[in-house]
Image (cartoon, rainbow, N blue to C red):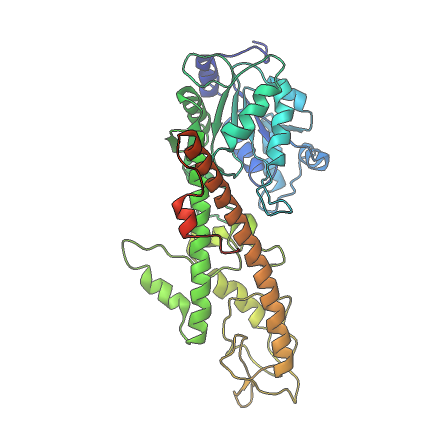
Length: 432
């Protein structure tokens, strides 16, 4: 059967079940490449699409540019039929198309959907009837139906439409948020439930069948918007709780309380509590790039370990001349590089400050940098911390603002007065 022939939903489902379906994954990044390897492991024929020719060349050469993915896995996928390409005309040969492109903030701190829009414009001319298009990129509710689908429909030369009712002809569309957790080696990717929201029931069924080949459990929801909101809730939940425990860590330091002892005691409660640990960032791509701690982020949170205690103690054990690390006080706040050695004549500063206390090997008395140097380092640290925290807050506020705009629009369409929802009025953006 030629690859470019239109497929019915029944035929596509049977091809997926028999591992004969052709899968195209667009975006060979930290989400798309692992997904590609999972499909390849299960015997499906996979093609990876990316506009970065350097990535395409590396993958076709059997090498990897992602640290946690060894080259051997790429080579095994190649032996199973995997190939990478930058030619989007090959999309017409695919039965299913999965979009895994980034959604960063633009210079105005608004969600930048340009990668999704450009990808949709590249797919549209090569789209054929019966194909399944799935968006995985993190975005605000409404993106699939208001951004992706109109571009696919407008740019298709055959005038194909997304299937919105059972029995219609056209192409199928669904949204399934990525749940990639870099650094987490305790939970197998197959064991992470996959949320799926199709534009209509057939699209949900086909997407569930496709992801069911690589995931042990799929979770269908009523619409793409519901799946998009699920991802937003997951991210906000993580952001709020890590930010909370980071603040408590600083408070506990000043009160000479071990935050990890507190968390370990609190998590013995069998209901109503989930442990979060102090972390150098909010996890995932939000981890500040200037931190060089490998594996820090959401994966460490998922393992329920003590990332801040382990990661930051490494820096704080840079002892003074003749000193020891035995009296080091842990601190959550990151800094650039090891601390300079203490020299004779440095003034003492209060041992309860936010910087680690170092003790003399001879007299065991606390020593710290002179006050002026201490203040300069504190100011530098606070400036960078505020910049990073402001960036994270603006990103989440921008997403919440987009949700508010969408809800206001729906209110007007239904005959309401419109305006910002009450929850957004009661809880305004913290940046403004």
